[in-house]
Amino acid sequence: MAYLKQQRPEKVTVPAVRASKERKERLVCLTAYDYPTARVVDEAGTDIILVGDSVGNVVLGYDTTVPVTLEEMIRHTRAVRRGVERALLVADMPYGSYHTGADDAVRAALRLVKEGGAEAVKLEGGMNRVEVVERLVREEIPVMGHIGLTPQSVNKLGGFRLQGKTAEAARRLIEDARALEAAGAFSIVLEVIPREIARLVTESVSIPTIGIGAGEFCDAQILVLHDLVGLSFSRTRPRFVRQYIDLRAQMTEAITKFAEDVRAGAYPAENESYPLPSEARAELEAEGEAVRIRLRRSALNDESKC
Image (cartoon, rainbow, N blue to C red):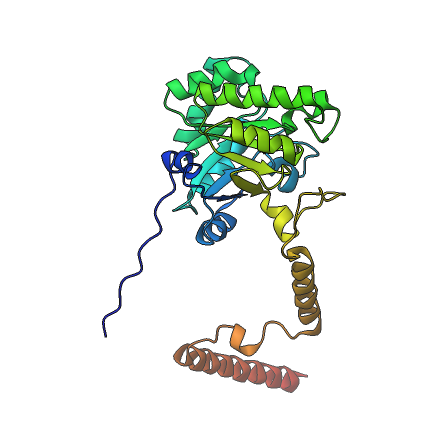
C-alpha cells in the first residue's frame, strides 16, 4: 500500500506574517533562548520565535532586561537558530544597541542577522524610533515594533505597570503604531495595555499586532516560554500569564528521585553500566590470577625466612 509522504510545513517568512492579518489567521509566538527549547518550540508549530532580551530575567538571572548585552543576544540567537526550521526567527535589540543613532542600530542589527542568524529584529518605542526603523528597513533588515509597556524603559516608567490607561494615552499608542507601520515595521508587539485600546490599535493598522497582556483582539499572541511552562522564578505572576504545565515541580521531583537512587546505590543499575567485553575480561582475570599467585608465593617466602 502506498503512503503519501508528509509535506513539510511551509517556512514562515516576513511577507507571510504581514499577510496573516488579511487572512484573519491568528499567529502563535513564543520565546526561546537555546537550542533544545528552540527545537521543541519550533516542532510544536509555533509561527514566530522571539529570542527576547527577557533572557536576562529568565535565563541569566537579572532583575530587568537592561543589563543584557548585544554579545549575549548574539550568542543566544545563534543557539536558537540551530534549532529552528519553520518559524520566523526574530531577535530583540538590547538596551543601548539602537539608542545612539541609526548607524549604531544598523551595525547591531547586522550582527544579529549575520552572526546570530536572525531573520528580523525587534526594538522598543514608537514615534521616537521612526528614524531608526526607517533606516533598518532601508538596509533590508525587517523590523518588529514594540509599544505599550516597554521593559527597557523600566527606570523611566517606574516599574512594570499597565500602560495606556487614559484616552490621551490611547491616542498616543495609535499614533505610535501608525508611525511604526509607515516607517516599514512588519508587525507590532502590544504589551500590557487595556484590551479596548489594543483593539483600537489593531484596527488602526494593516500590519499584525502581537499581544502580550493586551487582550484577545490582537492578531497574534506571545508569551515568555518560561512563564508558560512554570520555569519562571518571578516573585509574582503577571495577570496575563497562563501556565500550562509546572515543569519546575516535575523537574524537582525527578532530581529528588535521582538523588535518592544515587544515595541508596540504586543508580546506576547493571543495565545502565557498560560491561567489559568477554575476551578482555578473561585476559584481565588471568592476569589477576597470576598476580595473586605471585603474591602468595612472596608471602610464603617471607614466612619461611622468619
